Amino acid sequence: MIVLDTNVVSELMRRVPNDEVVRWVDRYPADEVFVTAVTAAELAYGVERMPEGQRKTTLAVKISELLTEEFQGQILPFDGVAAVYYGEIAAAREDQGSPISMADAQIAAICRRFVACLATRNTKDFVDTGITLLNPWGADDL
Image (tube, rainbow, N blue to C red; front, side, top):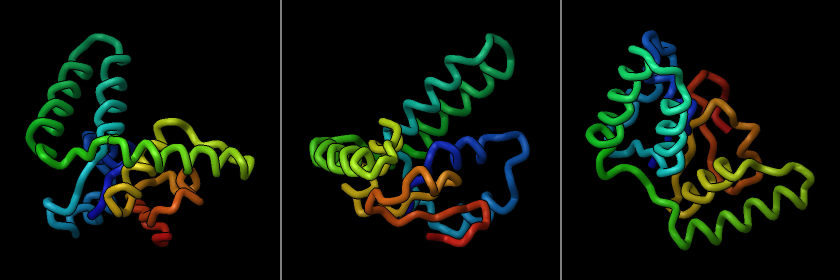
């Protein structure tokens, strides 16, 4: 099971996405690729913060289709088990002197909950969270 971080989904939605990232994602069967509810929320928030105009409208439609069609049934929730993992991850990172953002800790917790690998460009943000990290931008998978 592969979970796409928000930056991977955002890259795939660009007018001209990075070829390397597209090829990387295409290596996996669609039924093995998921997103989290946190990523869905980040995408929705991001489009709402955009200035009004055609670009915002187009992107809002793309995000809606992505979440309701392409990833239908493949959006992983932040549930009670993930909440426990969240507490462990956030506290451990604070104790190490390297706090983690709430969204990143939630995404990591969801990945731990569902024993999933996280595909992200921001691998440093997820170090020491107890999950396997993959970088679609060509850096060695961690």
